[in-house]
Amino acid sequence: MQLVEHATFATLMLKPLQQQQAEAFLAHINDNRDIYEEVIPFVSHTHNLAQMQTVISANLTRQSQGEALFYTLWDSEVMAGYLLVREINRDANWAEIGYMLGKQWQRQGITTMACRWLIERLFASGLDKIALCCNDDNQGSIAIAEKLGFKLEGILRQYFVVNGKRRNMCCYGLLKDEWLG
Image 1 (cartoon, helix red, strand yellow):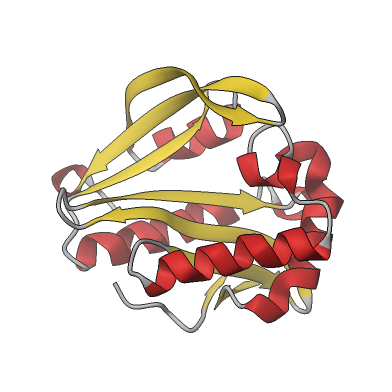
Image 2 (cartoon, helix red, strand yellow):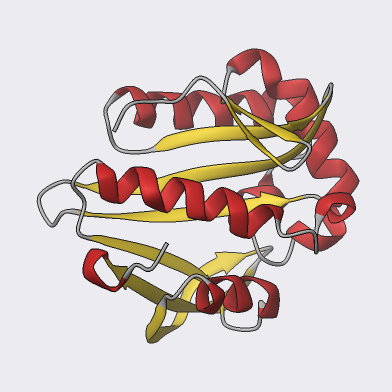
């Protein structure tokens, strides 16, 4: 799948992740730390510009190797969120998507719209399945997964660590032939 240069969702512009976005990305995390810190693993380890630059560098390396795709969402000059293909598995022909959207832009349908766009592109690229995983108590992400037609495939108990706590992860899947768009 090719990296897209830009797209628009409601009032937000999607752009490819770039190292020069580090300051804005860190500001976005700091402005939304209260909603991200318990659900997004890298947030609890990202408190300064050097740490943010390391996260971006690692992600851009994975992207250059064809393992993932990373985008930022912008409201003019302010970073509003992050949209990603966290993993691409060409052998099994699936990908896992993820997202984070600042509280100011939530509950406007933007995440659903952006995920729908991403799912369309992934299926058009020849993938057969999309996964979406989240904390088992993340009701907002669970609602988005279900709204998009994903089916709960299981809960991985104590699967990952967020902010020093082991967390359960719900794993949802969507097959290409189930996608209604």
